[in-house]
Image (tube, rainbow, N blue to C red; front, side, top):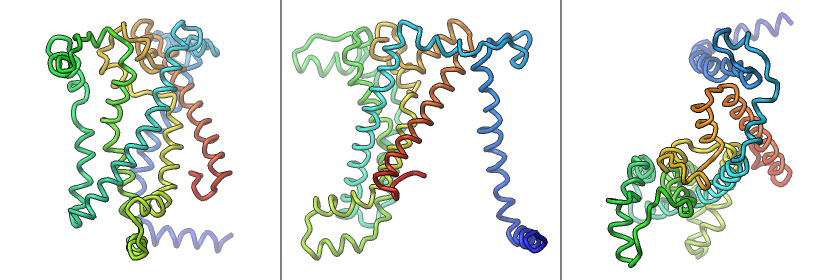
Length: 309
């Protein structure tokens, strides 16, 4: 025991600058990630501001029931799950395609310009999306009604009053927003692949498509799976700005734009019930945790090396 303590003390003295560097990160995690976990109590209470959270009466699971008892429950759950399923599949697919395309272009034309090439998708994703969508879809002055539809000999559309086109609109907007970040993640993995693999493939006469299929995709398999697992964990969440601000919170579009997050926000504004809002957040977190663990278990059973943990 004494020898172990001496070794520990010796290690601390030797590496104390490194431990000191850990302190800000640990403090940040405690303040921002662990202390707020006490707020889970709010989900099980009927908060009375006059007495405070701790003294407020317990509400049991009644705060959770309003999510399922609402007449909009089916719509918001359906929209949240289906949109996120489409976002996960299309977002990762297009992000992977863009990353491979950028690396192919860099190899052929900009062999020494990796830093410039990698910025392109990021810049595409940082444009003010809601303003662009409104500029395209505005009924009086929008680009679609004034330019595109007349060319196609079609009548103007009141986009913010017609729910049918919005699944396509929101999917396109999401891809525009996320493709830069996703492609950079894939690109960072892609440029780390050993170049000798490609050189050997060229010597053997492999075409570009064969190099992608036999080298690029297998080497990126673990990154793809990890990103998919993490995305599945947030399948019950939705981008609030995308589903609330982009459709201009139009009530006529609720059928195709209402999600769990927008529903909770509107309920909070109307009923001022932070207990129900907290219950919705806890429900999303628990369900996301279960999905991540389940998905990772399936992946680990099929290919242990590709699992997240």
